[in-house]
Length: 334
Image (tube, rainbow, N blue to C red; front, side, top):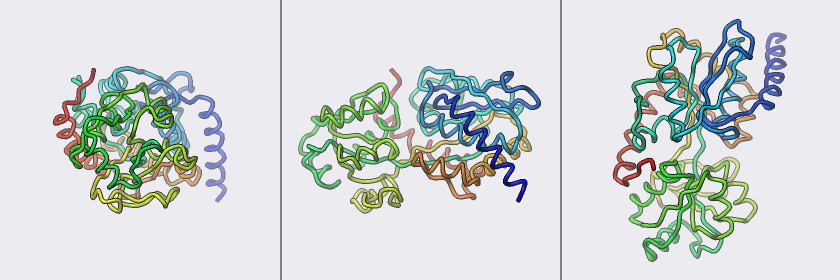
């Protein structure tokens, strides 16, 4: 009991420290054994402030308690995260450099960019961290009252509606292409420099619809600024049980999850991967970590989905699902 209380005290202290040092998106964690904090670093392939960064830092703090090793994060941005991911792929497979990424960086980018690494073959899965479904949302002036009516309205106005995305090849863009394929609809994609400006234009009525992470859209839905038609999962959101699932709304099996995970460079010894995985599992089991992730609208995977093997199988399945959709839609990096 005393040990557990001490670990929680350490974790809260580390949480306060990390909140002062937030940085973005995709985290590559460099664990510095017996080194001062300032002597080691991790690679983050996005600018500071993104959701993947926040998730990575929350989990990293919990891991730091277990590993008792400092973790520092460096932002290496550019090319949709591929520069930072590539740096991790070229790192020594010694367990000191890890990559925290998401659906876009470790699945979609493999079909969108010409990469110097293979998203499946050049990394060792460590653990699935979180997932967050999307909401299908539209401006309030849209005449459709439910998802069936939205699809009918889009079919009646082919090529006229505008869907905002967080950029070419972003999960929102790919989800829109998937939606068109599944529903036989056609609309225009409007790329923005991130989801926030796209959401501002949706609220203002400048665009018609979005496929956006629930954690981003839900506050605007609750505020009555936009309309939500469905959540892209097979269960309703605990935080918004009034929004139907895509199955309930009539679009069976249209599941999209913006998930995050952790990887090491290819060739990292299995015992090292096992140690890192154990640290992740311990972090995700902490009440404080779970609450922070829930506050971000994230779902923590069940224990049996937190293994390296589970992440590897899931990543492969996601690749087999999304790559054909991307290629059929002709989505390529600009």
